[in-house]
Amino acid sequence: MTSEETENEMTTETTPVEIDRIIAAAARAAARSAETTPDERAHWLHAAADALDKAGDELVALAARETRLPERPRLRSELVRTVFQLRLFAQVLADGEFLRATIDHADPDWPMGPRPDIRRTVVPIGPVLVFAASNFPLTLSVAGHDTAAALAAGCPVVLKAHPGHPELSVRTRDVLVAALREAGAPEGIFEIITGAQAGVSALRHPDIAAAAFTGSRAGGRALFDIANARPRPIPFYGELGSVNPVVVTAGAVRARGARIAAGYVESFTLGAGQFCTKPGLLFLPRGHGLDDRLREAAEAVPVQAMLNERIADGYRSGSDRLSESPSLTALFAPEPAASGFRPTLSKVSATDFAADIDVLGAECFGPVSLVVEYGDIDELRSALAVLEPGLTATIHAEESEADQVRTLLPALTGLAGRLIWNGWPTGITLSWAQQHGGPYPATTCPTFTSMGTAAIERFLRPVAWQGFPDALLPPPLREANPWSLPRRVDGTR
Image (cartoon, rainbow, N blue to C red; front, side, top):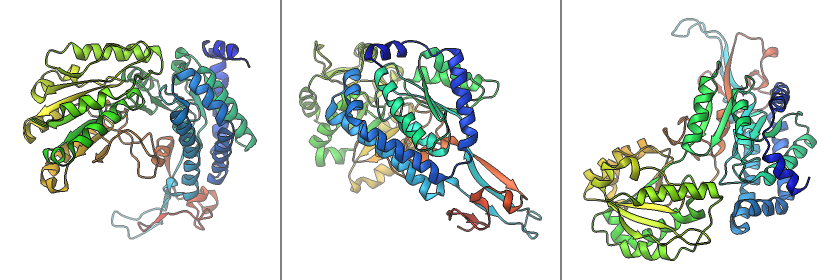
């Protein structure tokens, strides 16, 4: 397929007939996939990782051409991460704890009355619709984290490709489908669709059992409402963005203020500020004396390109809206560059910030940030109280300030799903303990994570078997424990 043919394919909506065919194949695959073992699915994931690794040079080159992202180190590191997360979910399958196998044997003396034999585990929820993201064309796209988590759970994936990297999407699809087929996965276990209306139609399809999305609040909320308006609503796991506040105490300013200023600018300009974890607000105590340090760090950031014109236009309108606020004082507001964007940094008092929270507290995707100056801890808490919840909240402080920090932790915990101590929110490691989520509007479902091994839980549904003979139970619940799983039996692990 030529580049021109690929572009034409990706600018054409997948037809309703094709959507029905693709989802019907996914439904058939779901029935077969639900009968597979974790070892079989781990084999699929390793095969996919090997294939993507082998095709890495080609995929990285396509991504660089379509997204304006640099091949090194950015896209190369994305490829490594994409391969790693597939292998990480294979480890989840080998571990077996994700099945949450629980057995309560019959007990005639149970305090609530005689207890029947009841056993609980999880099963794949069914075909999953994944909306690819624009800002991570490998890690959060066709073979991205949501795809890896859903396949690990045993769920077929129908992926709505992002128009920001069309040729890459088609080629990644081809590599992934071939690898899964060769590894013995059911036909129909993975396919892509294209076009905005195709995504909406697929979301409404009765055989889609869950959906995952990473993107804008407006787009995610519209899809969330569609998922809930269906005759049979489905879980919609939307990650919609965040302002990610950073709080700095007076002790931290005295101890290492210059390093904090430099680190903050580096974090909010990383990738031209096009990360959902970009810190958008820096809370500093009044009289911090870091204006010059912040300005110098911002001046040193080179011109950066945005992913595409749509995102660039959104950044322009967002930064223009901020600049119109009379309460702001510019720290660094360069003239627009012909070839890209320079960072923009302003400051405002905590009182003025709280009074104009709808404008000043809104996320702006791109290299722009605000310094919010507070007078005391009470004023800081008042400013935090009006913030919308997000994905992360960071605090820079000294251990000697533990009592002061302790008074802030309830507010920070209420704001975010991940708290960072003396670090920066950009750069999300993939691990067993990772949590990437938060109360709305950060996500549509704050009880789950979209990153890390626990992301598999979004695509699993618990089922209990009561009174069944051992031969009819799923293997995780049989008395002999044929898969050698960690289990809770009669309340004891």
